[in-house]
Amino acid sequence: MHTQLDWSDVTTIREALTRASSFLREKGAKDPVFEAELIIRHCLGWDRTKYLISMMEPIAKETLAQLDELCQRRSAHEPLQYMFGEQEFYGRSFAVRPGVLIPRPETEILVEQVLAAAATVWSEQKGLAVADIGTGSGAICITLALEKPDWQVTTVDLSPDATAVATENAERLGAAVRFLQGDLVQPLLTAGEKVDILVSNPPYIPSRDVDELDEEVRLHEPRLALDGGDDGLDCYRRLCEALPELLRDKAVVAFEVGIYQAKDVAVLMRESGAIDEVRIVPDLAGIERVVIGVRR
Figure 1 (cartoon, rainbow, N blue to C red):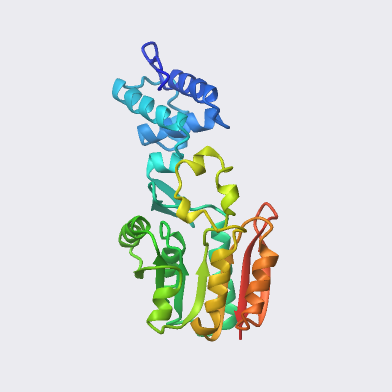
Figure 2 (cartoon, rainbow, N blue to C red):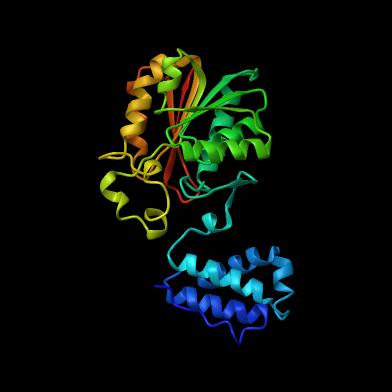
């Protein structure tokens, strides 16, 4: 049941901010003023500067109607990214909608580490075969394809929804990516293909913990992209088991991992017998976030 917001006495942008933030605060928003500002700016199509200098300007009835709808959706813990239909990643705007995991800032570290490791392994990087396992919105594979247009980038996902959104993003951003649908690396193994670089941000949350996630994630983001099995390591086991068959003579493997998982994933990588060196890289919060393996 929606709590009705009364906008009848709201005439300016500042008053709309007060009314919207007060409503979101009642609904448990962590940062109601900031969220209300983002929603109002989205409705108006304004950047922050324009918004700040226009606080006393009148706000149209149609804008208030749109604002009301978005506030109601936010009160049901729908992520802002789904409401706005986009999320920035590596300086580019990616379309996102339900059925696709929202790209996180920490995943940019995964991309940076892949680019850095490739530079140390190959002096000539043209034509490298890259596979991104778990397409999602296409943030990883598209970013790599745009940063390195000479690389041959393939991505695999089980979800038709994710593949559809990622294909749209690739077309809009002008990235050359090959999309395969299937279970982890199976399509590549079936085709007998080998890769120079394997990158993945797979589902890594232990099954029992998925139901404890914030409502924003649990109720709206796809479980398929979150649930990593009993201990969260199912996908890493399968990926590491495939490394001997999948990697070329020189290779880079990079995985994003959940909290407290890095050391276990590093062991799996070493035990594959296909990797010579393994490093763990923390994110900006100091959490061990990326496990990167190199075969020379």
